[in-house]
Amino acid sequence: MVVHDWVWVATIVGLLAILLADLAIVGRRPHVPTLRECTMWVVFYVGLAGLFGLGLFLLAGANPATEFFTGWITEYSLSVDNLFIFMIIMARFAVPRALQQKVLLIGIVIALVMRGAFIAAGAAVIDRFSWVFYIFGAFLIYTAVKTATHEDDPAEFKENALVRWASRALPLSKDFHDGSMTVIKQGRRLFTPMLIVILTIGTTDLLFALDSIPAIFGITKQAYLVFAANVFALMGLRQLYFLLGGLMERLVYLNYGLGIILGFIGVKLILEAVHQNDLPFVHGGAPFEAVPEVPTWLSLAVVVGALAVTTVASLAKTRVDARRAAHADR
Image 1: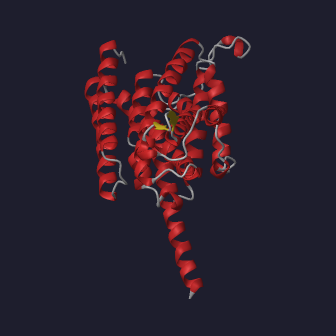
Image 2: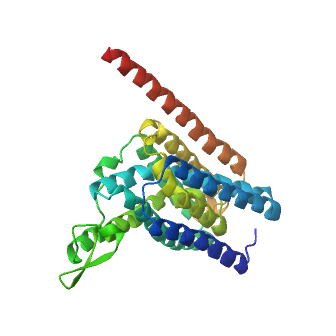
Image 3: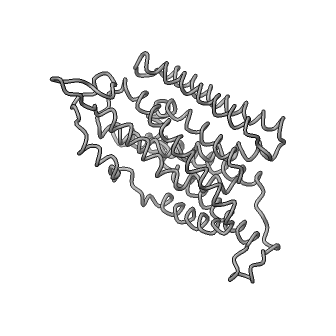
């Protein structure tokens, strides 16, 4: 699929306009969103992604559209796991509920900019060195094991070096002051904790990109589709944070589903690297043409299937546990 420069420009301008409009709405009236409001926004962004995929299907064919939907669902599911960390960050900094929308939106904009740079670098590396798929694949399998076994405990979250430096070096006020980034007190301009929280959200998301970006490159090598899938996944993340606040504690098996997805894509990357092998010390630098390539439709089936099974199993388990607890209290 050939993506012309004007397509890139039109896509970025369109998505940027939507984000700016969203930011203007949130900034004008900070509030705790209602369930109905969150649902409408999530439906809007999911519908937007659906229309984008439909446009790809009509203009570029079934394969790019399938790659986009597979990548978007994968990124969206991995982003849901990120919400656990976001909740911990909000609680640790005691962010008022009415300001959490603004924090999330600005943090996500920062994350999109950094992910864009990450995607550009990844696309350039993959274009020149196909053997990097060996590394990506091994890393994803390692991450899959850690995710499935809960080795990365969200409760053990710690601020990164940039956030720790900013907290020490910048003059900070103690209050959020209605969400302003700075405030003047006794003739001195101070930064509010709002800046630190936004930095934490944005930079922490970049750490999550270390597994999500290689994962989506295992689905498609098209930088345009990788970028679009990431943008659409992150755009609906803010409303999902409020919509799934209570539900997330019930997704007890989500880590297994994410582990299966990451592990599958890791194996897919290694198979593709072997199929296209150009390492001189492996098989004389010749590709292993007998090794099969995993089709995109199978990737989509595995991603959707893993999420569906683990979600249903999680909700069933929590329902049974609730009934047992109710009987025990009698």
